[in-house]
Amino acid sequence: MAKDPYETLGVARTATAEDIRKAYRKLAKKLHPDLNPGDRSAEARFKEVSAAYDLLSDPEKRRRFDAGEIDAEGQERPRGPFFRDHATADAGPFRTRRGPRAARSGIEDLFEDLFAEREGGERFAFPGGDLSLRLTVPFLDAVNGATARVSLPGGDVIDLKIPPGATDGQVLRLRGKGLPGINGGPPGDALVELAVMPHPLYRREGDTIRYELPVSLAEAVLGAKVEAPTPAGRVMLTVPPGSNTGSVLRLRGRGVARPDGTRGDCIVTLKVVLPPKPDAALEQFLRGWEAGRRHDPRAGLEG
Amino acid sequence: MDRATFCLRARLDAATLEAWIEAGYVRRELSEADLARALLVRDLVQDLGVNEEGVDVVLDLLDQLHEARGALRRVLALLAGEDRRLLERVRAALARGGE
Image (cartoon, rainbow over all chains, first blue to last red; front, side, top):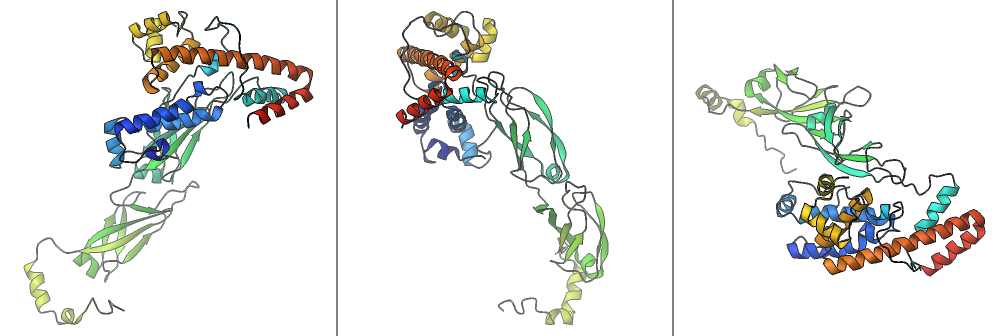
């Protein structure tokens, strides 16, 4: 959904502020809804172009976008009301001059009104536009489900239910929370795109959670019960004797929550970690450890 | 609406609003339609590089366009009530003209 703002304005990433202003001006002249009273599609394109300009005309926002700190689609600024929606509905004329000349183009929409009316539709009513929003969601809120407070550009604040197992890029539709309808048409929807933040420990593959769990040399060799974090809370994990770096343990039902209430698995890969300071007793043991000298962990490394 | 509300919603200062009323861009009644018109003037001046003389021309042409559209709309509505087949033919003829 978030288009590249440079692409939207048709400028290079190296464009100067002046280039960007010119490109926007050129597009806005063509696309401004009030300069295109018969073309409903101009409005959507105009909003896209203004959002891109909003981002790139602000040096700080542009710098942050270029650095990858923010996305193309921040909270979209709603545009309007547009004068064209009042020009016919409003009885009071703005000008007193007489003598209209017939317009030669851009009137196809007038027919749509007539045919919609015939089919029982509301006269000249248009549904309101959809509003696109982007919501950043902490990793665990997406995995476990959560309720997020979202403020809509119109000023409304709503509690948005993030379903368990929500994914990055998922779009939640809030019916009737978009732009108001025109001439009695229904309001549009708010479309909330979720941006799930990464987690320092967990990685997610579908409904499986993977991460690396450090264990001590003694725990790996001798076996142990250790406490391990999972998105569903901490669990006691049995490290079997003779475990090694790369040993994989599966914690069933401790992964990503599913809509039906069950959970995927959490897969833990062990990583043997030596003590931070060499231990004299360990060194002495290793010097005298014959089997250890014969063990070649690089055997077969090149096929 | 009152001036303060209007200025806030149109993101204008009071002096600019007064100038725009004087220039005839916005009417003293300050209705929703006037607000929409003020936002248009703001876009024209701030974003589209239209100067004061240009705003007059644009608004005048737009008003004419809306008048013409209104007239055509009334004609078509009348036709729609009288003769649907003629309406279809008018639509086809206009579609050809737009090519």
